[in-house]
Structures are given as structure tokens and as C-alpha cells.
Image 1 (cartoon, rainbow, N blue to C red):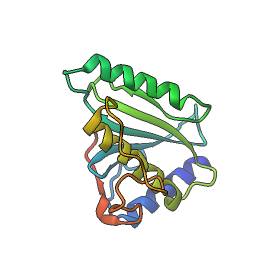
Image 2 (spheres, rainbow, N blue to C red):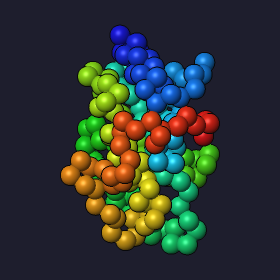
Image 3 (cartoon, helix red, strand yellow):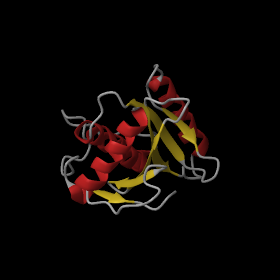
Image 4 (cartoon, one colour):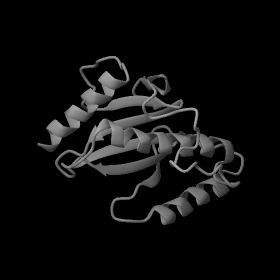
Length: 162
């Protein structure tokens, strides 16, 4: 049932945001939110009731790289919990990723998109500060960019696989 729930969620996202249909959309659903690349995937046999979220923060700059990556590791300490996300480096691209497992139990488009938009806001801020300076704090809804909302189709686009 969980894979069916995952497929239903991906269909809802594609329909609600007018994304182009793809034969591979269930294997890896690639999205751009606030110009931040995301990949959504089913948790497979290891995590059958989970939606896997990969948010691409981009490549850390060479200048201050060690300090930036130390801050990313500090972020992992802050995120440490059973179902919390964590940061990693994509070995193929060198990009920093935020990886999160979300429960498919009660998930619907209206509940997952605000979470993804929050991650996109954090990634956008990371692109400005690389965690070396204080980040802009989110508003009362947890959104960094109030001009963008999770239900605004203009902020969500399909993306090429990354």
C-alpha cells in the first residue's frame, strides 16, 4: 500500500503544479522549488513507508570550504533525531544534500509542499551564507520567502535528473 500512496502523492504533485508527465516520475520525481533542485523517491524495501527527499544545496565554494563543511557537519548534530534529515555530500557532483525521510502514512500534497518549500528556503539562504553568517529567520509559518507559497504553481517546476 505504501508504494501506491507514494505514486498517488507524485501524481497529485504533477497535477497540482502542472508538471510534465514522465514514465520515470515514480522512480525519481525531480522538482525545482525556488530554483532549488529536489528529488523525491519511494523508500523501497528498506523504508517502504517513507518518502525520500533529496534537496540539493549546491556545491560548496572553494574559499572557506573547510569551515563551510564543518558548519554542515554541525547542522547534522542539530538535526540528530530518529526521523530527522541530515546533510551529506553527493560523491558524483560534490554538492551538499539535505536528505530526509518523511512518513507516507498521512502525507498529502498540501502537507509535504510547505515542508519542501521550507527546505528550499534554507537551501537558498545557504547559497548566500554557507552557514558562515547568521541566516535569515523564517516567518511564523516557517517560510523564508513569504512571496512564495507552497500552493503557488509558479514556484514549482519539473527538473531534469541531477
